[in-house]
Image (cartoon, rainbow, N blue to C red; front, top):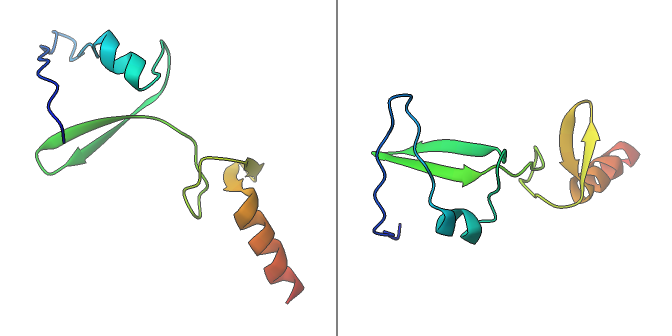
Length: 83
């Protein structure tokens, strides 16, 4: 991980402000969902991107039974039915 040198304090409600420079760099705007990960002793914030439940692809997604699946995986599944 690369240090930005920016330090923020947690407020009384547990909030931390992400600096505008970082929000601009990652195209994060007001109301965007952010995922929170824990890795060892680190907390990682990541802009949420919907992805395929099988391969993790974030492009060309379809909804099937309230699940997201990419067109590549959908075509592979349809070929399985033919066999």
